[in-house]
Image (cartoon, rainbow, N blue to C red; front, side, top):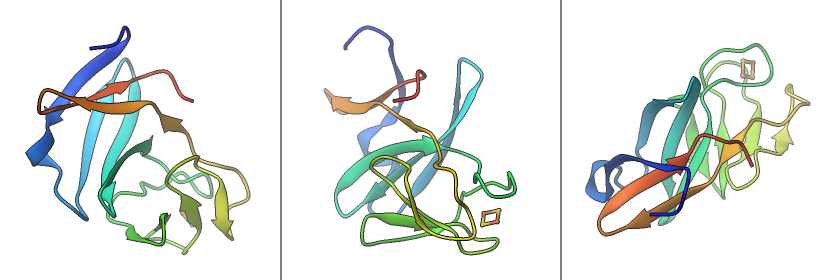
Length: 106
Ligand code: FES
């Protein structure tokens, strides 16, 4: 395991289309699996600070359940308003059947 990474779940705990809340070093993070890839993003939307958990994922983006802002899962960039600030993303990797996340934002 690379330095700074923390094991947050077994790989099988986050299946395709699923999301998992984790808290690491004071950072609230949403681990997502979408189209076979794992992503770790900030837990809160940048629009009105509501949680983004439960947002629909499609075409590499997540849609905030509250007002419909969309963010790219890979880098947190805004894909659709009303948000105009990106959300955080975090380094994530798998090794030996576990998912590990680094609490330092990208
Ligand atoms: S809180 Fe996410 S779009 Fe408004």
